[in-house]
Image 1 (cartoon, rainbow, N blue to C red):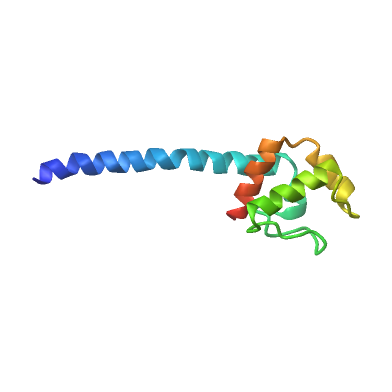
Image 2: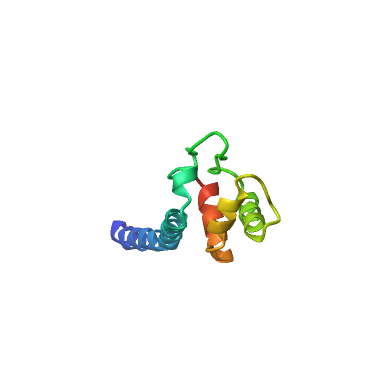
Length: 108
């Protein structure tokens, strides 16, 4: 009986590890996008440590909210004193990339 359980256990474990791999890859891709698009100098490595008090802590915010903010900044709909820098940076970020970054930040 124990011999029957061991292959089943290994099969289940392997399946669970394989199912988790795409999520880990997406997290790594999103973290790389966040870094490569120039977010770290102002918002910190994980969106928790802004450069100064005028920059928001973006980690842990809802993904939809973060995506909408990025989209509105990129389009110019959202405008503030800090917007020119953000608008320039967001100009190089594709919609799908904004969604990935937003989801990653929400999980931080």
